[in-house]
Amino acid sequence: MRPPVFLTGATGFLGMEVLARLLERGDREVIVLVRARDNEAAAERIDGALAQLWRDPAPYRARVRTVAGDVTSAGLGIAAGERTSLAEEIGAIMHCAASISFDMPLEEARAINVEGTREVIGFARECKSLGRLERFVHVSTAYVSGKYEGTFRERQLDSGQEFRNTYEQTKWESEHIVLDATDLAPAIARPSIVMGESDTGWTPAFNVLYWPLRAFSRGLFDEIPALPSAHVDIVPVDYVADALAHLLDVEDQGVFNLVAGREAPFANQLVELACDRFDRPRPAVVPQGGPDDDDHGAVYMPYFDMEVVFDDSRARALLGPAGIRPPKLTEYFGTLMDYAEEVRWGKRSMTREEAHERFSRETAAA
Image (cartoon, rainbow, N blue to C red; front, side):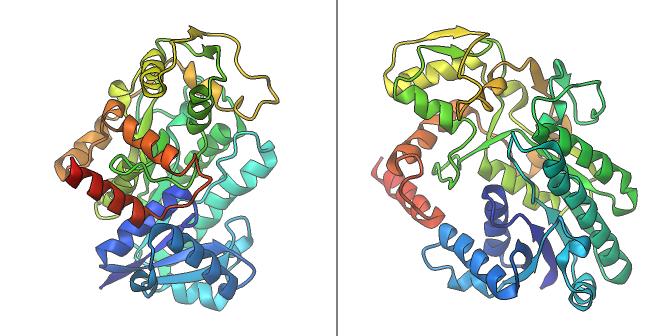
């Protein structure tokens, strides 16, 4: 058995997908940091996450160890003795935990995304000095690019960009902290907009692009506030999770953009996909306007008028030989919408396992 992986953010959408892959591989235990008052409450939270993945998670539960804590607390909120014991055995750290709220006040977002990352790095250094830590992977976002225009490369970070929201800004700030931790030889993964699984559509989170797509399906947009030629960079969660799991197994360090890149659809192409899917007449696509500032979807609309293309040369060179590639949105858009409609855009629950079974039945029937 390989040394355990220490995973933060395991109860979030992406973290759950990473956890599922690590458990299904079965070659190492996963120690998950869970925000909770004690280890019993932490175990209850992770049981809830596992229940979203599998109808019967019992076969996997034995390889998950829960630790109550909080990235915003000193020492991750773990008692000194337990922390030292963990540090002596952990072989890799995957830091997925973050606030993904676009409108959180800056100092609150910093406490989680910046200072939380600092605490995880401190723990990683303790693991390295006391034990056998070999790998540190930090999950960032492609949107550290902010409002940059042009091709944003993996080697870029400081390009004089401004930011749309506190999420982008604090993830940019946290990357600086990780890049400075050269003693950990960190790998930084930058996903773009993450949606459901490409083969089943499964997702427990219907935010970001799901909101405007659902609104469009109901005829709520007379016009689409977007730049027609803007790339809308979307990747399925299975691509991102597969890439992250692979990063744990290699020694490559530096930044990897987990994006669709130049194969990302333009905004007008996404509109056409939605029109065909929902049998709606094509609305006007305009660069200005859109929801009022108080509208639930207002925070998402700026991602339809970006004049940036993400380069992912390093990611493709590393992941391509392993068969890990982002599919084109046209190949799985229908699957995403099938699932969304099946579960009524999140009002009905379906485990990841059930979604896979449903996909298998439909493939066999076809």
